[in-house]
Length: 129
Image 1 (tube, rainbow, N blue to C red):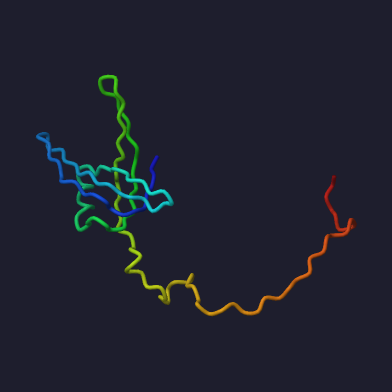
Image 2 (cartoon, rainbow, N blue to C red):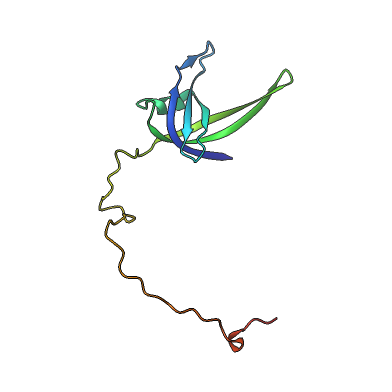
């Protein structure tokens, strides 16, 4: 099962190298929600390369899996990032791009017409009960 989070990179930790040849790099993403959350992810082995060129404050989309384990009676949860994509920052987006079909116009709204609402007559009721 995989999950996805969008937000800004808050912290990029240094890469950790282990004697067995295993390496990982942790990072924290602050979500873009009403109540932002700081979520720590880990990038393992070749996934670390996806963090190259990214810095604190960059918008990203992180796709990840949840891994759990037990060690000496304690339970641990890891969020393993398997895809880290650079997002579009709000400052670099152009508000009036021609490819954006959802552009907002600053033109005033045209005149609003009033519509009379009437209740349906009992003969218009086609419900079976």
